[in-house]
Length: 397
Image 1: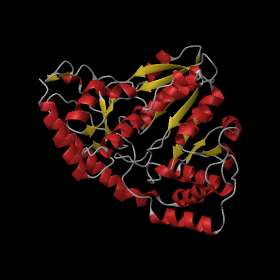
Image 2: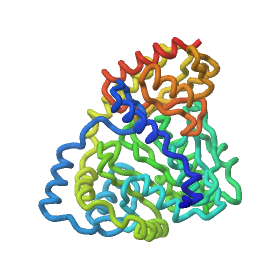
Image 3: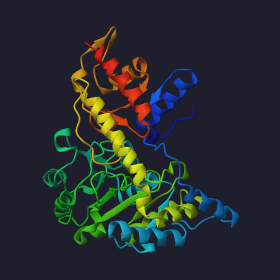
Image 4: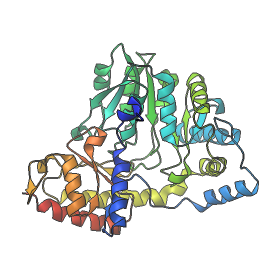
């Protein structure tokens, strides 16, 4: 009998992808499911990026690519880092991958040995934990609560560091909470990080441009920790290029070379057409995204207004990305007929069956009191979904 590996059996399925799969299955059965589970913008890739892809095909850029990415793409990413983040990464410090998820996995697999501890502030993106486990690292969870806008403090970080700590992974703006770290908050973390020169910090900034409070701040801006920080970014979210699959890192030469070596044995270089199209995205002024960001801002306010009209739901105000992460623990122990809600998982199952709205349990993101709502869809659909959720929650007694 064929036996699967222990590493696979110990790995959890992505909760967001699982809920998306269930939603598609129910829709195929004729159910009127509204899915607010996936982090995928409903906007189309800008035409100038698609035009660049067509031009690349016409010029026959259809061969294998360098493992770390085309030189001209990495140069454009280097220029983007300077322009948008005031970060100086040469092209040799940049590695392009098949999505930011692979970029993160490359760094973890390159730096973590069995038994190394990796600090992960919660709530966290679902894949961080599983990638660390795959590398045989030990996730160390530092809990942030809704009262602090789901952001950890410098004191919490320092308390979590032990002689076995090798890495920290966090995101700003954050998936699943939409929280955005300020420059002052990042400086506080940097003041701790610099005390531990063996500590590598992955700063996941994929939602950089979807920010409602002004300028995005990068952890690597502080010179004292620049070599310890790996800045993760990509084109999926801001440029609505989820299916194109391109992410990238800016890192010290040591880590960039390691990721290049790792990637060379797994996937080699990412799609040639995607790379050429992404040059157009990197060169574009981020101001062209203003309409999209304004739309997300309006949707956030719509969702918050609706949630705040639902008795028992607690919210904060997320400053970026396109998620709301409300505390729904007041519904635990309540029932509708034979269905009893014991936890956030149950509430998501209940809302899927009763309201036909697909959401994701907060347990998958490290907070069992919350659920994640993605507002990456139209205001009309969001209004319909929130009306359904409100009606279903009112039935719980």
